[in-house]
Image 1 (cartoon, one colour):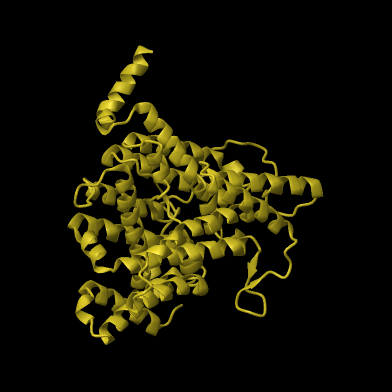
Image 2 (cartoon, helix red, strand yellow):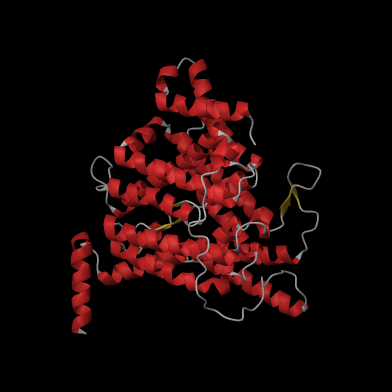
Length: 456
């Protein structure tokens, strides 16, 4: 008992727990809460990067997803001492799977090379202080539009994975002609359960929804006495715990430059960088404000350490083939439980590392079971719509272009590029060219070349 008290006292001193008005117990509860709200990424990330069985192996992606999230969240807690958790970013993983690999024809190692390059670039920008300068160059409404577009894109991916939406119909996108499939049967109850739990504020709502849908899929498989899902999906696993398969660690290549050409490759890196850029800044400032961390000028003390770790998360994510890792808005769940220090992040990080050993369970989960989580995460990101100044056509039209191009062209790059180009052209032709930051002109030129050169 005395030893436990000493450990608690040391943790209190190291993380300044009492100084920030918290307790060790509160921090532990906050860390567990954050993990519960974002543990769905362990199943959703492999589903997206798996490309319906044609991409990376589910169990291996789960292992590296847990490894990268655990390591970077621990680092955030210990070095930055903030209750911010890091994991593979939704939207960024979709960019890897559906744009870089699916549309541009890159191999997964080459696509992960794009992520590593983006992470290195952001790290340099953080160390030189340029990241804040670029952040200030882009209008806030365009930053919000990027998040909204990614949300719509993720929701569409969820509906496609569920078998609800299909490109095979009289229109470019249509409702599947057959909605009485077992996949749809698994999706609908999972979506209802997840939605109801989210509206009730239940922690881990998306994770519970995924697990409930998976159980239903297993029951259906057993009841029908036939393999509706192949390769061990929706089947009772022969074991629960196994040694993590980390074969994807280090499997990245910079061959994307020669494969795409320097202009398209640069556009791809910039696209990921911009998305990573603004998602993190918005998340950190938003949660920091909720927790009372911001100073009178709205700045977060020690933000450079936070941004540096987040930038390194992109490098680690690409190097482990888990896609770019970024600070999660779900960290707000832990903050709402009273988390105020990095100790909460340490708890979350440890739980992610333990999850590396659960790949046999993860391999059971069908894509229809993770689809509800994708749709609801899309909802979370779409809430930014209310903050865009739609009454100003000069910003509303570029924002709309950004939002529409992402899901309808299945490309985050196209959405970002089209939105930025539209904004710069409208501003210049309406006589407000001086209001556009020079850095934004540079980015627009890159995207103009990208579209003129031809989208692969």
